[in-house]
Image (cartoon, rainbow, N blue to C red; front, side, top):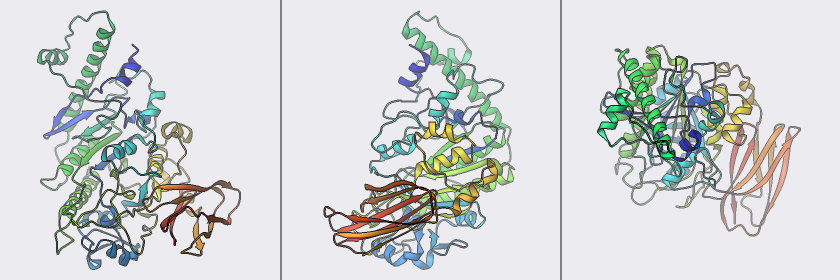
Length: 525
Protein backbone atom coordinates (compact mmCIF):
# COMPACT_ATOMS: atom_id res chain seq x y z
CA UNK A 1 0.00 0.00 0.00
CA UNK A 2 1.34 3.45 -0.91
CA UNK A 3 1.91 5.88 1.93
CA UNK A 4 -0.36 8.48 0.37
CA UNK A 5 -3.22 6.02 0.04
CA UNK A 6 -2.67 4.72 3.55
CA UNK A 7 -2.69 8.20 4.97
CA UNK A 8 -5.93 9.07 3.24
CA UNK A 9 -7.82 5.91 4.12
CA UNK A 10 -6.69 5.22 7.69
CA UNK A 11 -7.13 6.89 11.05
CA UNK A 12 -5.53 10.25 11.69
CA UNK A 13 -2.25 10.65 13.47
CA UNK A 14 -2.33 13.03 16.38
CA UNK A 15 -0.11 13.00 19.43
CA UNK A 16 -1.17 15.34 22.26
CA UNK A 17 1.11 17.46 24.38
CA UNK A 18 0.15 19.67 27.29
CA UNK A 19 0.84 23.38 27.77
CA UNK A 20 -0.71 25.06 30.81
CA UNK A 21 -3.11 22.16 31.20
CA UNK A 22 -4.42 22.35 27.63
CA UNK A 23 -4.03 19.44 25.20
CA UNK A 24 -2.48 20.44 21.87
CA UNK A 25 -2.92 18.24 18.82
CA UNK A 26 -0.73 18.43 15.73
CA UNK A 27 -2.28 17.90 12.30
CA UNK A 28 -0.68 16.24 9.35
CA UNK A 29 -0.85 17.35 5.75
CA UNK A 30 -3.96 15.39 4.78
CA UNK A 31 -6.07 16.65 7.67
CA UNK A 32 -9.60 16.77 6.29
CA UNK A 33 -10.21 20.29 7.58
CA UNK A 34 -7.10 22.29 7.60
CA UNK A 35 -3.67 21.84 6.31
CA UNK A 36 -1.77 25.05 6.24
CA UNK A 37 1.08 23.58 4.27
CA UNK A 38 -1.20 24.84 1.50
CA UNK A 39 0.24 28.17 2.57
CA UNK A 40 3.82 27.11 3.40
CA UNK A 41 5.23 28.24 0.07
CA UNK A 42 3.79 31.69 0.50
CA UNK A 43 6.48 34.26 1.20
CA UNK A 44 4.84 35.79 4.26
CA UNK A 45 4.59 35.13 7.98
CA UNK A 46 0.82 35.50 8.26
CA UNK A 47 -1.16 33.46 10.79
CA UNK A 48 -4.87 32.53 10.83
CA UNK A 49 -6.67 31.81 14.12
CA UNK A 50 -10.05 30.09 13.79
CA UNK A 51 -12.53 30.12 16.69
CA UNK A 52 -15.39 27.64 16.50
CA UNK A 53 -18.60 28.49 18.38
CA UNK A 54 -19.97 24.97 18.76
CA UNK A 55 -23.71 24.43 18.87
CA UNK A 56 -25.09 27.02 16.46
CA UNK A 57 -24.92 30.62 17.67
CA UNK A 58 -27.96 32.93 17.71
CA UNK A 59 -26.59 35.63 15.44
CA UNK A 60 -29.73 37.75 15.62
CA UNK A 61 -29.23 38.44 19.33
CA UNK A 62 -25.48 38.89 18.82
CA UNK A 63 -25.57 41.41 15.96
CA UNK A 64 -28.88 43.23 16.32
CA UNK A 65 -30.68 44.99 13.43
CA UNK A 66 -31.44 48.34 15.08
CA UNK A 67 -32.93 49.73 11.86
CA UNK A 68 -35.59 46.97 11.92
CA UNK A 69 -35.95 46.78 15.68
CA UNK A 70 -39.74 46.56 15.55
CA UNK A 71 -39.69 43.46 13.36
CA UNK A 72 -36.88 41.98 15.46
CA UNK A 73 -38.75 42.55 18.71
CA UNK A 74 -42.08 41.23 17.40
CA UNK A 75 -40.39 37.99 16.32
CA UNK A 76 -38.85 37.27 19.72
CA UNK A 77 -40.56 39.27 22.43
CA UNK A 78 -39.49 36.83 25.16
CA UNK A 79 -35.75 37.03 24.38
CA UNK A 80 -35.30 40.35 22.50
CA UNK A 81 -32.59 42.69 23.77
CA UNK A 82 -34.06 46.07 24.85
CA UNK A 83 -33.32 48.73 22.25
CA UNK A 84 -31.76 51.01 24.86
CA UNK A 85 -29.25 48.28 25.85
CA UNK A 86 -27.84 47.61 22.36
CA UNK A 87 -24.17 48.57 22.05
CA UNK A 88 -23.53 51.26 19.45
CA UNK A 89 -21.03 50.89 16.63
CA UNK A 90 -19.19 53.93 15.29
CA UNK A 91 -20.61 55.07 11.91
CA UNK A 92 -23.06 52.14 11.76
CA UNK A 93 -26.30 53.33 13.34
CA UNK A 94 -28.37 50.57 11.72
CA UNK A 95 -26.56 47.76 13.55
CA UNK A 96 -25.51 47.10 17.14
CA UNK A 97 -24.02 44.42 19.39
CA UNK A 98 -25.33 42.45 22.36
CA UNK A 99 -24.71 44.48 25.55
CA UNK A 100 -22.33 41.82 26.94
CA UNK A 101 -19.85 42.37 24.09
CA UNK A 102 -18.12 45.58 25.13
CA UNK A 103 -14.72 44.08 24.27
CA UNK A 104 -15.65 43.53 20.65
CA UNK A 105 -17.41 46.90 20.55
CA UNK A 106 -14.07 48.45 21.47
CA UNK A 107 -12.24 46.49 18.76
CA UNK A 108 -14.87 47.49 16.19
CA UNK A 109 -14.59 51.17 17.07
CA UNK A 110 -10.79 50.84 16.75
CA UNK A 111 -11.17 49.42 13.22
CA UNK A 112 -10.01 45.92 14.21
CA UNK A 113 -13.30 44.04 13.87
CA UNK A 114 -15.27 43.22 10.74
CA UNK A 115 -18.84 41.90 10.89
CA UNK A 116 -19.90 39.95 7.81
CA UNK A 117 -23.69 39.77 7.76
CA UNK A 118 -25.81 36.66 7.07
CA UNK A 119 -23.10 34.14 6.20
CA UNK A 120 -24.34 30.75 5.05
CA UNK A 121 -24.83 28.67 1.90
CA UNK A 122 -27.63 27.85 -0.60
CA UNK A 123 -29.22 24.72 0.92
CA UNK A 124 -28.75 24.93 4.70
CA UNK A 125 -28.49 21.79 6.80
CA UNK A 126 -29.75 21.86 10.38
CA UNK A 127 -27.82 18.88 11.77
CA UNK A 128 -24.94 19.88 14.03
CA UNK A 129 -22.63 17.21 12.65
CA UNK A 130 -23.44 17.58 8.98
CA UNK A 131 -23.49 21.38 9.09
CA UNK A 132 -20.05 21.37 10.74
CA UNK A 133 -18.76 18.99 8.07
CA UNK A 134 -19.98 21.40 5.39
CA UNK A 135 -18.24 24.37 6.98
CA UNK A 136 -14.99 22.51 7.55
CA UNK A 137 -14.79 20.78 4.16
CA UNK A 138 -16.22 23.79 2.23
CA UNK A 139 -18.50 21.40 0.35
CA UNK A 140 -21.92 21.94 -1.16
CA UNK A 141 -24.60 20.74 1.24
CA UNK A 142 -25.38 17.77 -1.03
CA UNK A 143 -21.72 16.77 -1.47
CA UNK A 144 -19.57 14.77 0.95
CA UNK A 145 -15.86 15.53 1.00
CA UNK A 146 -13.16 13.93 3.14
CA UNK A 147 -10.62 16.65 2.49
CA UNK A 148 -10.44 20.19 3.78
CA UNK A 149 -10.30 23.51 1.99
CA UNK A 150 -6.59 23.97 2.77
CA UNK A 151 -5.48 20.35 2.60
CA UNK A 152 -6.64 19.93 -0.99
CA UNK A 153 -4.16 22.43 -2.34
CA UNK A 154 -1.44 21.03 -0.09
CA UNK A 155 -1.92 17.58 -1.58
CA UNK A 156 -0.58 18.96 -4.88
CA UNK A 157 2.16 21.05 -3.29
CA UNK A 158 3.68 18.55 -0.83
CA UNK A 159 2.96 15.04 -2.14
CA UNK A 160 5.79 13.49 -0.10
CA UNK A 161 4.76 14.76 3.31
CA UNK A 162 5.50 13.62 6.05
CA UNK A 163 8.93 12.51 4.75
CA UNK A 164 11.70 14.88 5.84
CA UNK A 165 9.48 16.76 8.29
CA UNK A 166 10.32 18.46 10.58
CA UNK A 167 13.43 19.92 8.96
CA UNK A 168 15.67 22.96 9.23
CA UNK A 169 13.46 24.72 6.69
CA UNK A 170 10.15 23.58 8.21
CA UNK A 171 10.87 22.91 11.91
CA UNK A 172 7.38 23.57 13.26
CA UNK A 173 3.89 22.08 13.13
CA UNK A 174 1.88 23.29 10.19
CA UNK A 175 -1.42 23.61 12.05
CA UNK A 176 -2.24 23.33 15.74
CA UNK A 177 -5.52 22.59 17.44
CA UNK A 178 -5.76 23.49 21.11
CA UNK A 179 -8.46 21.64 22.98
CA UNK A 180 -11.06 19.50 21.27
CA UNK A 181 -13.51 20.27 18.46
CA UNK A 182 -16.28 17.85 17.53
CA UNK A 183 -15.89 18.23 13.81
CA UNK A 184 -13.77 17.12 10.90
CA UNK A 185 -10.85 18.73 12.73
CA UNK A 186 -10.33 15.40 14.45
CA UNK A 187 -12.64 13.05 12.60
CA UNK A 188 -15.22 13.12 9.90
CA UNK A 189 -17.49 10.88 7.86
CA UNK A 190 -14.53 9.25 6.10
CA UNK A 191 -11.25 9.89 7.92
CA UNK A 192 -10.48 9.79 11.63
CA UNK A 193 -7.39 11.84 12.40
CA UNK A 194 -6.75 10.57 15.94
CA UNK A 195 -3.92 8.34 17.17
CA UNK A 196 -4.26 6.34 20.37
CA UNK A 197 -1.23 4.44 21.69
CA UNK A 198 -2.55 1.78 24.10
CA UNK A 199 0.63 -0.25 24.67
CA UNK A 200 2.89 1.51 27.24
CA UNK A 201 6.07 -0.27 26.16
CA UNK A 202 5.45 0.77 22.57
CA UNK A 203 5.01 4.35 23.75
CA UNK A 204 8.34 4.29 25.56
CA UNK A 205 10.07 2.81 22.53
CA UNK A 206 8.71 5.60 20.36
CA UNK A 207 9.99 8.26 22.74
CA UNK A 208 13.39 6.60 23.02
CA UNK A 209 13.77 6.10 19.29
CA UNK A 210 13.81 2.30 19.60
CA UNK A 211 12.01 0.25 16.94
CA UNK A 212 10.93 -3.34 17.16
CA UNK A 213 11.60 -5.58 14.18
CA UNK A 214 8.69 -5.42 11.76
CA UNK A 215 7.46 -8.13 9.39
CA UNK A 216 7.96 -7.61 5.67
CA UNK A 217 4.21 -7.36 5.00
CA UNK A 218 1.64 -4.68 4.21
CA UNK A 219 0.75 -4.56 7.90
CA UNK A 220 4.39 -4.13 8.85
CA UNK A 221 4.82 -1.33 6.34
CA UNK A 222 1.75 0.46 7.67
CA UNK A 223 2.97 0.14 11.26
CA UNK A 224 6.30 1.58 10.21
CA UNK A 225 4.46 4.56 8.76
CA UNK A 226 2.49 5.07 11.98
CA UNK A 227 5.76 5.10 13.91
CA UNK A 228 7.18 7.69 11.54
CA UNK A 229 4.24 10.00 12.27
CA UNK A 230 4.47 9.37 16.00
CA UNK A 231 8.18 10.21 16.11
CA UNK A 232 7.56 13.30 14.03
CA UNK A 233 4.87 14.60 16.38
CA UNK A 234 7.05 13.92 19.42
CA UNK A 235 9.74 16.13 17.87
CA UNK A 236 7.08 18.78 17.33
CA UNK A 237 6.01 18.44 20.97
CA UNK A 238 9.53 19.17 22.17
CA UNK A 239 9.67 22.20 19.88
CA UNK A 240 6.32 23.46 21.22
CA UNK A 241 7.51 23.28 24.81
CA UNK A 242 10.76 25.05 23.93
CA UNK A 243 8.91 27.90 22.22
CA UNK A 244 6.27 28.15 24.94
CA UNK A 245 8.85 28.29 27.73
CA UNK A 246 10.70 31.12 25.96
CA UNK A 247 7.85 33.59 26.61
CA UNK A 248 7.49 34.57 30.26
CA UNK A 249 5.44 37.78 30.11
CA UNK A 250 2.03 38.29 28.50
CA UNK A 251 -1.01 40.49 28.80
CA UNK A 252 -3.91 39.89 31.18
CA UNK A 253 -6.61 37.39 30.18
CA UNK A 254 -9.97 36.79 31.89
CA UNK A 255 -9.87 34.07 34.55
CA UNK A 256 -11.95 30.88 34.43
CA UNK A 257 -12.38 31.22 30.68
CA UNK A 258 -11.35 28.22 28.58
CA UNK A 259 -11.31 30.15 25.31
CA UNK A 260 -9.12 32.86 26.82
CA UNK A 261 -6.68 30.19 28.06
CA UNK A 262 -6.48 28.68 24.58
CA UNK A 263 -5.89 32.05 22.91
CA UNK A 264 -3.23 32.92 25.48
CA UNK A 265 -1.27 29.84 24.39
CA UNK A 266 -1.69 30.79 20.73
CA UNK A 267 -0.30 34.28 21.38
CA UNK A 268 2.65 32.78 23.25
CA UNK A 269 3.50 30.35 20.46
CA UNK A 270 3.27 33.06 17.79
CA UNK A 271 5.51 35.42 19.75
CA UNK A 272 7.92 32.57 20.51
CA UNK A 273 8.68 32.27 16.82
CA UNK A 274 6.66 29.21 15.85
CA UNK A 275 6.12 29.17 12.08
CA UNK A 276 2.72 27.48 12.36
CA UNK A 277 0.23 29.04 9.94
CA UNK A 278 -3.17 28.05 11.35
CA UNK A 279 -4.46 27.64 14.90
CA UNK A 280 -7.84 26.21 15.87
CA UNK A 281 -9.56 26.86 19.19
CA UNK A 282 -13.14 26.29 20.28
CA UNK A 283 -15.80 27.16 22.80
CA UNK A 284 -19.18 25.42 23.14
CA UNK A 285 -22.65 25.73 24.62
CA UNK A 286 -24.32 27.71 21.82
CA UNK A 287 -27.18 25.21 21.26
CA UNK A 288 -29.67 27.42 23.10
CA UNK A 289 -33.06 25.76 22.58
CA UNK A 290 -34.32 26.92 25.98
CA UNK A 291 -33.40 29.30 28.77
CA UNK A 292 -31.32 31.48 26.48
CA UNK A 293 -32.05 34.53 28.62
CA UNK A 294 -33.14 35.28 32.17
CA UNK A 295 -36.89 35.80 32.30
CA UNK A 296 -37.58 39.44 32.92
CA UNK A 297 -34.02 40.53 32.10
CA UNK A 298 -33.10 39.45 28.58
CA UNK A 299 -29.63 41.04 28.64
CA UNK A 300 -28.59 38.31 31.09
CA UNK A 301 -28.52 34.52 30.83
CA UNK A 302 -26.72 31.67 29.10
CA UNK A 303 -26.28 33.36 25.75
CA UNK A 304 -25.11 36.61 27.34
CA UNK A 305 -22.46 34.70 29.29
CA UNK A 306 -21.26 32.91 26.15
CA UNK A 307 -21.02 36.15 24.17
CA UNK A 308 -19.25 37.90 27.03
CA UNK A 309 -16.70 35.08 27.24
CA UNK A 310 -16.10 35.28 23.49
CA UNK A 311 -15.85 39.06 23.47
CA UNK A 312 -13.49 39.38 26.43
CA UNK A 313 -11.26 36.54 25.15
CA UNK A 314 -10.80 38.08 21.71
CA UNK A 315 -10.19 41.55 23.18
CA UNK A 316 -7.55 40.20 25.57
CA UNK A 317 -5.94 38.21 22.75
CA UNK A 318 -5.78 41.20 20.42
CA UNK A 319 -4.36 43.42 23.16
CA UNK A 320 -1.78 40.75 23.97
CA UNK A 321 -0.73 40.46 20.32
CA UNK A 322 -0.23 44.23 20.24
CA UNK A 323 1.85 44.16 23.41
CA UNK A 324 3.93 41.26 22.07
CA UNK A 325 4.46 43.22 18.82
CA UNK A 326 3.06 40.49 16.56
CA UNK A 327 -0.32 42.10 15.85
CA UNK A 328 0.51 42.67 12.18
CA UNK A 329 0.86 38.93 11.54
CA UNK A 330 -2.47 37.61 12.86
CA UNK A 331 -5.99 37.41 11.44
CA UNK A 332 -8.80 35.85 13.46
CA UNK A 333 -12.15 34.43 12.42
CA UNK A 334 -15.17 33.06 14.27
CA UNK A 335 -17.73 30.64 12.89
CA UNK A 336 -20.61 28.48 14.07
CA UNK A 337 -22.20 25.61 12.18
CA UNK A 338 -25.45 27.54 11.73
CA UNK A 339 -27.52 30.38 13.19
CA UNK A 340 -30.94 30.21 14.85
CA UNK A 341 -34.51 30.86 13.69
CA UNK A 342 -35.90 34.38 13.48
CA UNK A 343 -38.79 33.61 15.83
CA UNK A 344 -38.01 32.48 19.38
CA UNK A 345 -39.73 29.44 20.88
CA UNK A 346 -41.97 29.20 23.95
CA UNK A 347 -39.08 27.88 26.06
CA UNK A 348 -37.19 31.13 25.93
CA UNK A 349 -34.75 29.88 23.32
CA UNK A 350 -34.18 29.57 19.59
CA UNK A 351 -34.16 26.56 17.29
CA UNK A 352 -31.68 25.55 14.58
CA UNK A 353 -31.52 28.07 11.77
CA UNK A 354 -29.52 29.05 8.71
CA UNK A 355 -27.35 32.12 8.08
CA UNK A 356 -25.70 34.18 10.81
CA UNK A 357 -23.07 36.94 11.14
CA UNK A 358 -19.38 36.07 11.25
CA UNK A 359 -16.57 38.03 12.92
CA UNK A 360 -13.10 38.69 11.56
CA UNK A 361 -10.61 40.48 13.78
CA UNK A 362 -7.09 41.82 13.44
CA UNK A 363 -5.08 44.91 12.62
CA UNK A 364 -4.88 44.31 8.86
CA UNK A 365 -8.53 43.87 8.00
CA UNK A 366 -10.98 46.48 6.81
CA UNK A 367 -13.11 47.09 9.88
CA UNK A 368 -16.83 47.74 9.65
CA UNK A 369 -20.07 45.96 8.83
CA UNK A 370 -19.95 44.11 5.53
CA UNK A 371 -23.43 43.61 4.10
CA UNK A 372 -26.87 44.73 5.25
CA UNK A 373 -29.10 43.76 8.14
CA UNK A 374 -31.28 40.68 7.51
CA UNK A 375 -34.55 41.47 5.76
CA UNK A 376 -36.98 40.30 8.47
CA UNK A 377 -40.64 39.51 7.74
CA UNK A 378 -43.30 41.67 9.40
CA UNK A 379 -44.81 38.62 11.05
CA UNK A 380 -42.31 35.78 11.48
CA UNK A 381 -43.36 32.16 11.83
CA UNK A 382 -41.48 29.32 13.50
CA UNK A 383 -40.25 28.19 10.08
CA UNK A 384 -38.80 31.51 8.97
CA UNK A 385 -35.05 31.72 8.60
CA UNK A 386 -32.47 34.35 7.76
CA UNK A 387 -31.47 33.79 4.10
CA UNK A 388 -27.77 33.78 3.36
CA UNK A 389 -26.32 36.97 1.96
CA UNK A 390 -22.69 35.79 1.71
CA UNK A 391 -21.49 32.27 1.05
CA UNK A 392 -19.05 31.22 3.78
CA UNK A 393 -16.72 29.98 1.06
CA UNK A 394 -16.31 33.57 -0.13
CA UNK A 395 -14.82 34.32 3.28
CA UNK A 396 -12.45 31.32 2.97
CA UNK A 397 -11.49 32.31 -0.56
CA UNK A 398 -10.81 35.89 0.52
CA UNK A 399 -8.52 34.66 3.31
CA UNK A 400 -6.66 32.27 1.02
CA UNK A 401 -6.04 34.85 -1.69
CA UNK A 402 -5.81 38.14 0.21
CA UNK A 403 -4.26 37.04 3.52
CA UNK A 404 -2.05 34.12 2.51
CA UNK A 405 -1.55 35.52 -1.01
CA UNK A 406 -2.35 32.27 -2.84
CA UNK A 407 -2.90 32.76 -6.57
CA UNK A 408 -6.41 32.69 -8.00
CA UNK A 409 -5.59 29.53 -9.98
CA UNK A 410 -4.38 27.62 -6.93
CA UNK A 411 -7.26 28.93 -4.83
CA UNK A 412 -9.64 27.41 -7.37
CA UNK A 413 -7.98 24.04 -6.76
CA UNK A 414 -8.69 24.50 -3.06
CA UNK A 415 -12.30 25.68 -3.31
CA UNK A 416 -13.33 23.70 -6.45
CA UNK A 417 -15.48 26.67 -7.52
CA UNK A 418 -15.05 30.39 -7.96
CA UNK A 419 -16.42 32.36 -5.04
CA UNK A 420 -16.39 36.17 -4.98
CA UNK A 421 -13.52 37.79 -3.11
CA UNK A 422 -14.81 40.05 -0.35
CA UNK A 423 -12.84 43.25 0.35
CA UNK A 424 -12.42 42.44 4.04
CA UNK A 425 -8.60 42.49 4.21
CA UNK A 426 -6.35 45.47 3.57
CA UNK A 427 -5.10 45.47 -0.01
CA UNK A 428 -1.54 46.11 1.16
CA UNK A 429 -1.20 42.59 2.65
CA UNK A 430 -0.82 40.89 -0.72
CA UNK A 431 -0.41 43.97 -2.89
CA UNK A 432 -3.82 43.53 -4.52
CA UNK A 433 -6.28 46.13 -5.71
CA UNK A 434 -9.25 44.87 -3.73
CA UNK A 435 -10.04 48.37 -2.52
CA UNK A 436 -11.76 49.10 -5.84
CA UNK A 437 -13.85 45.95 -5.69
CA UNK A 438 -16.15 47.36 -3.05
CA UNK A 439 -17.17 50.29 -5.24
CA UNK A 440 -18.22 48.00 -8.05
CA UNK A 441 -21.42 46.00 -7.99
CA UNK A 442 -23.62 48.76 -6.57
CA UNK A 443 -26.62 46.49 -7.01
CA UNK A 444 -30.23 47.16 -6.01
CA UNK A 445 -33.37 45.03 -6.23
CA UNK A 446 -36.97 46.18 -6.53
CA UNK A 447 -40.14 44.38 -7.53
CA UNK A 448 -43.69 45.36 -8.39
CA UNK A 449 -46.28 44.48 -7.29
CA UNK A 450 -45.27 43.37 -3.81
CA UNK A 451 -47.22 41.54 -2.45
CA UNK A 452 -48.19 39.72 -5.65
CA UNK A 453 -50.61 36.97 -6.59
CA UNK A 454 -49.35 35.32 -9.75
CA UNK A 455 -46.72 37.60 -11.27
CA UNK A 456 -44.17 40.19 -10.13
CA UNK A 457 -41.62 42.15 -12.13
CA UNK A 458 -38.13 42.16 -10.61
CA UNK A 459 -35.70 44.92 -11.52
CA UNK A 460 -32.07 44.67 -10.49
CA UNK A 461 -29.23 47.09 -11.02
CA UNK A 462 -25.77 45.65 -11.74
CA UNK A 463 -22.27 46.65 -12.67
CA UNK A 464 -20.47 44.85 -15.50
CA UNK A 465 -19.50 41.30 -14.60
CA UNK A 466 -21.09 38.09 -13.37
CA UNK A 467 -24.54 38.32 -11.79
CA UNK A 468 -26.61 35.66 -10.05
CA UNK A 469 -30.30 36.12 -9.21
CA UNK A 470 -31.84 33.46 -6.95
CA UNK A 471 -35.26 32.76 -5.45
CA UNK A 472 -35.14 31.52 -1.83
CA UNK A 473 -37.93 30.25 0.41
CA UNK A 474 -38.53 31.38 4.00
CA UNK A 475 -36.22 28.67 5.36
CA UNK A 476 -33.30 30.20 3.48
CA UNK A 477 -33.02 27.43 0.88
CA UNK A 478 -32.53 28.26 -2.80
CA UNK A 479 -35.58 27.24 -4.81
CA UNK A 480 -34.49 28.40 -8.22
CA UNK A 481 -31.76 30.24 -10.09
CA UNK A 482 -33.50 32.98 -12.07
CA UNK A 483 -30.46 34.58 -13.72
CA UNK A 484 -26.88 33.37 -14.05
CA UNK A 485 -25.19 35.63 -16.60
CA UNK A 486 -22.16 37.78 -17.32
CA UNK A 487 -23.13 41.36 -18.20
CA UNK A 488 -20.80 43.44 -20.35
CA UNK A 489 -22.36 46.66 -19.18
CA UNK A 490 -23.69 48.40 -16.10
CA UNK A 491 -27.40 49.02 -15.93
CA UNK A 492 -30.84 47.91 -14.82
CA UNK A 493 -32.28 44.57 -15.92
CA UNK A 494 -35.67 42.94 -15.51
CA UNK A 495 -36.96 39.47 -14.74
CA UNK A 496 -40.64 38.50 -14.73
CA UNK A 497 -41.35 36.00 -11.94
CA UNK A 498 -44.47 34.07 -12.87
CA UNK A 499 -45.14 30.88 -10.95
CA UNK A 500 -48.55 29.57 -9.88
CA UNK A 501 -46.87 26.71 -8.01
CA UNK A 502 -45.54 29.00 -5.28
CA UNK A 503 -47.62 28.70 -2.12
CA UNK A 504 -48.58 31.91 -0.31
CA UNK A 505 -45.88 33.19 2.01
CA UNK A 506 -42.62 35.09 2.29
CA UNK A 507 -39.83 34.50 -0.25
CA UNK A 508 -36.48 36.17 -0.85
CA UNK A 509 -34.69 37.38 -3.95
CA UNK A 510 -30.90 37.24 -3.64
CA UNK A 511 -28.70 39.18 -6.07
CA UNK A 512 -24.97 38.55 -6.30
CA UNK A 513 -23.12 40.99 -8.55
CA UNK A 514 -19.37 40.72 -8.14
CA UNK A 515 -18.60 41.27 -4.45
CA UNK A 516 -21.93 43.00 -3.91
CA UNK A 517 -24.73 40.81 -2.60
CA UNK A 518 -28.25 41.88 -1.69
CA UNK A 519 -31.39 40.29 -0.26
CA UNK A 520 -35.00 41.48 -0.67
CA UNK A 521 -38.15 39.88 0.71
CA UNK A 522 -41.21 39.43 -1.49
CA UNK A 523 -44.68 38.20 -0.52
CA UNK A 524 -46.88 35.79 -2.48
CA UNK A 525 -50.58 36.15 -1.64
